[in-house]
Length: 349
Image (cartoon, rainbow, N blue to C red; front, side, top):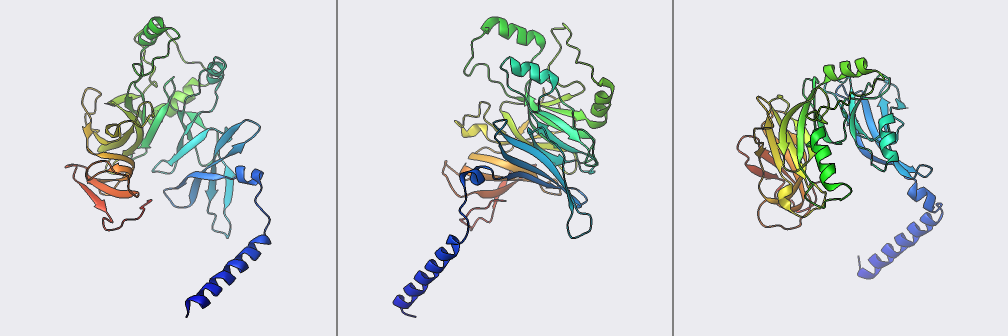
């Protein structure tokens, strides 16, 4: 086929496509801004249900609503879709391994939060539970420090979560006395603490508490940590993601900048905690030491390797921007291997 004929064919195809597009209604600005995004889609352990996080513009409240929906496969041509939450502030849903609960983060306003909001303080994300069989969601964490990341234990009995290292009442009062209304730019920044929380105990506490307010005693040693939680480890950086190993022996996490200013690649690394005898006094193990920004970690089924991705920086040498790459590391030795090493394109999942 000659170049001239090929050019005519391409031109004819373009004219035909343009004519076909002209028949369709144009997208309006309202339609463009009212699109629905799906930040998270999680399949239930039995494979018969899906929890879906949606995000859409809410013009009346001037926010982007984040709600959770549940789709069930009822064996027919079309399943059922029901809305699980309606606060507009719910995100990051995760099924418990036994399928009994869906845990998620929420910045919804409780009566206490409404009072804080009126004084100008922002709402903090807490960890909530809701049953896929119905009922109201309820919090299992509380306090002024927001939950940055969480993970289920393989047996569904424990929730692991990370917050900024909580202060005691005496520490907060001392800081307020020294600095009053002064906002420190860097000196007040601090890393995270990782906790474990017994799920059954947390549910019992919620049931027993009912509508009672939290006991704000004058004890200066009382911590702002969630009652019943046990501190496991301390991180110098903010914890971005937590993952428990399938055998239940270790906890992996990846960090990010405390201030969310991306200034140092050293702030983005993969760490692990040996859950047997875990304590804030024992240093966590750093598994990566490179010029890369790691994220999206996941354990292999045999608990021997941890997958992670890199979209910024380099694992192999000096900092360089590349297409998104996939790696895994040996959970014992820390040895890193790149998957699809001969492929130069983007590896998104």
